[in-house]
Image 1 (cartoon, rainbow, N blue to C red):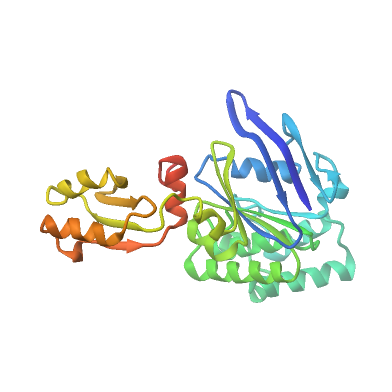
Image 2 (spheres, helix red, strand yellow):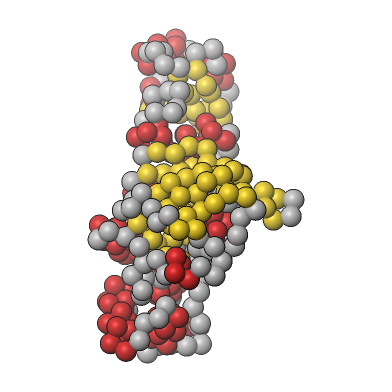
Length: 306
């Protein structure tokens, strides 16, 4: 459905996207996961036709996406990271503007507005000024504004920034219903739990490059370990940490040791070593690999670092 081929975008000396190639199939719920400044918003703006790449091509259903290509862009809906609403207008006035910009008129526009307000759970606030809305309400209205023309592909760029948990959950459930109805979604986020919950396939991006791509299970197989053990980083555990460096990867994050044993290293050997050093089992926590662990393995820093 959507194909990016060797796409590069620069802003002066900064390379925001670096030779990115990516294909999105019809009906996918694709997650673009990366920290702030990774290139997520730049990729979204290029796909939406708001900017043009320095190199490479972007096609939707085989047709090139470019600034001014209105026929192609009618199949796109964009939910930007920044609220794209007019605060001094009512909710209905806002949606009417967006609907008319997409060519909706008369009964078609009325039906689209009714459906949008029902989806956003804002029927009783149609005639309220947007500036009186909470952040969550504005986010929901911002989302449905991108769907009035029923696009084939929905681009959601950090769609839940600053949203309370209840509104975030409502947005998640709505997006999942949209995807089940056949709409293809590209969802950018720096929250790992969002990608895990929503996305059928995930691309991890940093410094403008796709570092890993696949389903959650596919991605986790890229880790060179099967379990991770954590324990406090202090003087009592320092001797244990020193010995573990020979049999796996050990790091310190926020005052906690993270030990990832090499494949084949038995956990029984770990606990035997800890016991020989007089360290009680209650100090240790074991967990399966996570997206955060993969990101740290690929980039050497936390996912939420800017």
